Amino acid sequence: MKNTKSILIGFLIATSMFLFMGQTNSNKNEGRYQISNFVIQGYNTKFYETTFDTYTGKIIDRKWYIESDYKEGKK
Image 1 (cartoon, helix red, strand yellow):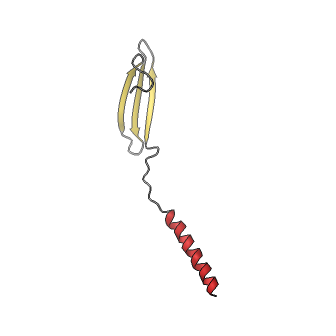
Image 2: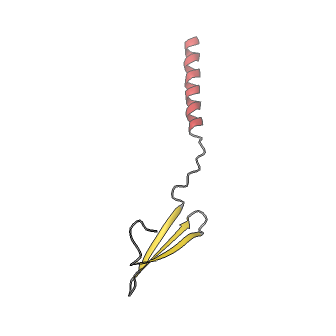
Image 3: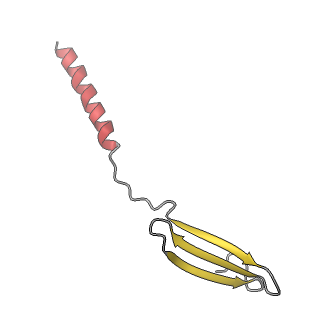
């Protein structure tokens, strides 16, 4: 009888630990911001970049670059 109680208590404690570990409150912002790009080609090619918040739908930032000024890593 004593051995059965020990096994049952151990099982219940282990189960409750897994349940409490699963109840973490993570506040991750993965996927919250999105960047939209488009290009207008003509005499001067222009790159337009818009950053917006996907949760609120608000535009965070808008930028445009001329092709001659645009270099990789320069922003």
